[in-house]
Length: 188
Length: 188
Image (cartoon, rainbow over all chains, first blue to last red; front, side, top):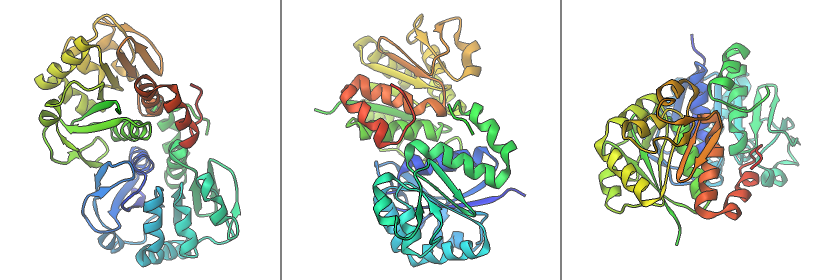
């Protein structure tokens, strides 16, 4: 059976980070659910792209756990993820269950707010470093995988973030062909 | 005044190519209108991401010409763009007016269908080459700019495509800072 990933979409999410991740994971055979933090309504992203989620986060949570929970960045979106008790509950459930928890760009601040992955090696959008450095082993890497925690830096690292998640969920044999298929200039 | 770009979104459009282009151009200060080929309703893209356009193509056309008209790829989306008389009319108007016309991935087939840019140097997603090679000087480049015609190859070249358009519309001083801001590993 296909692995299942949950992407939580909040108002102000960075749309490239969300869409590159969703699209690449689906190309890799992952069953992706795009869940709206505030419900099923259209989500206005950071650069005014309007995306309709597949379902609400509440409904998506009814079929937890997923094999991965993924938080796109965008400052406002990341702050909303940080403030949501349901996001905290879902992250904690998946952290305890050993499933993958992943965040890109500003979204690792939601890990901190919900006391997730404390002490692990993580990265983020560079200007977020100072908010994270006390609680984590902060590293300057485009993608950092520490156990079941995957973090990455921004729009320009989103393909590498997504490919890392495909590799972890479906194997190198699912991830590697996507590099040529999508015409990426990357080494994995 | 900000330069204006029109992105035409058809069912089955490649969502990464669309969103990377929209987002990067907006970061570069371009006034981008996302117009739905079939109207204002939600557009289901190639990997099932649902995007709500800003307006319909008919309404968007009322304020033509734009400084650039941009076609994202995706096979089904590109075929729908190829079949639309209004897309042909808009492309012809902009070709004749000397504004930028741009297409990525499979979308250059819409140029051919509407007899646009014939004989110019273009590129496309590699498997589309055979459909284009008779009518164009086909080149194997990640981004090709020939006069007012810009083409590119696929999702993995979408950042370079978008940055080239920002550079053409708003100058190198608008495009270059985006490389670091978005954390891209590129040389421009």
